[in-house]
Image (cartoon, rainbow, N blue to C red):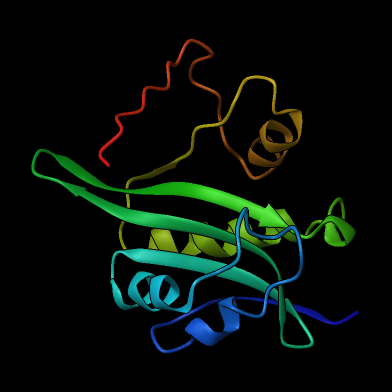
Length: 142
């Protein structure tokens, strides 16, 4: 097993369509992958084994008029056969390095309080839990 971890760039959307089972929640759509990678504020780090994406972490470079730049980590996913081998942490570290390069003041992520694996990952990468009282609200737009 020779796994490499790196950031993807615009034009590399085909890599995302070659993902191992269990990495993404749904099959990757080439049109959405292209749109994601074409947006300079969207970032995705991947772990690849022989040309197959076996893990990823995605984020948005978040800008607001009255706050320093932030990196919002949207999601982390790793194929089941690659879990518990340190790949998620390495992917996250590469993504956090991108945030530093972009001049982001902080990076942040939300997870469920009962998601022990995610909480362990984020803690091992230096994340600090600020609250266990966060409420997730969703607005249906379509």
